[in-house]
Length: 201
Image 1: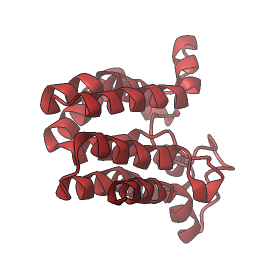
Image 2: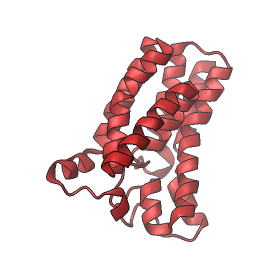
Image 3: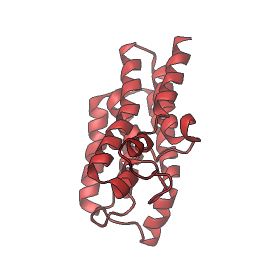
Image 4: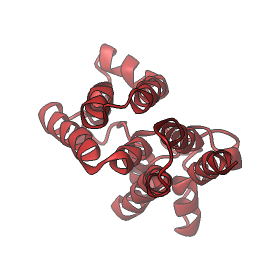
C-alpha cells in the first residue's frame, strides 16, 4: 500500500506544471498558446525571459528529484524506486491537472537522475553541457545525453530495474522530441545562440 501511495504521489507531484504556474504568477502568456506551445523552460525563456525560465527549470527538476529522494530515504526496493521515478516523469509529460499536455521531460529526467545518485546526474549533465558547447544545439545535446543515460545508470547502480526505467524514459523523451529530430535531419533546428527550439522540459 505504501509503495502504491508513493507512486501515485510522485505522479501527482510531477503533474504540477512549473511553466504554466510560473507564467500565471508572473503575468506572462500561457506557454501552451505561445511560442512552441510547449509548457517547458525553453518556451518560457522565449516568452518570458531568463528569470522565469530559471524558475521553471528549477521547478521541473525538483519534480523529478524530490520524489526519488523521498523513495530512497524510505529504503524502497529498486523496482519501487524505478516506478516512483517513472511516475514523476510521466506526470510531467502527461499532467492530470493540465489536460495531460506537458513538457518534453529533460529537466525532470535530470532531476530523477540526480535523485538516483549525484554521480549519475552529474555525468548526464556533463554530457549535455559538453555537447551543447560543441554543437550549440540544445535538443541534440539533450538527446545524446539521454541516449547515454541508461549506460550511466547501469554503471553506477548495477540495477536492472533502474536501467530499464531509464531506457523507457529515454525512449519517451525521444518521442517527445520527434519534431526536434525532424528539424535536425532537415537542418532547421535552431542553435542555442539563435534562440531556437531546445530540448528543455
